[in-house]
Amino acid sequence: MYESDILIQAYSQPEGLTTVTLEGLATGLLIVTTPLSGGEDLERCVNYISGNLGELPDLLLRSRALPKSRTELLASGRDFIEAGLTWDSIAQKLIAQDYSKF
Image (tube, rainbow, N blue to C red; front, side):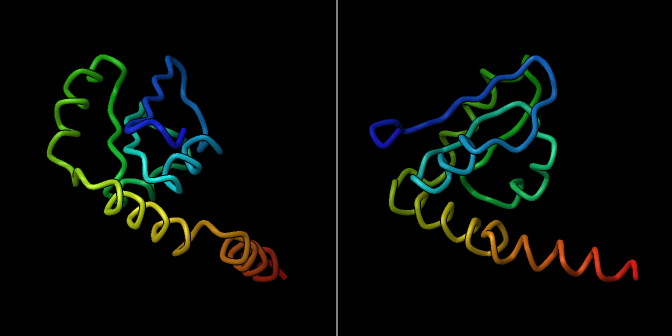
């Protein structure tokens, strides 16, 4: 994965937020994918472009307008993950949801 510049995930059926997606962000890859369930927050990340399977060629063309520096992509992906996708932040959200029911 470290020797790649882009991660393309093209699913014909809806797919959940995958570990591969998160690993791609953490290593500074540009992620081009069909929509991911649970991936709505990823729309805020500069590394992420999503669209329907038939739009894949256009998505790849759009990706050319994103930051070209691997350093920029790496920082963006890691910042995104650390801001809300760490175990601590997810655990805090789950605890808040569970305890609010009582």
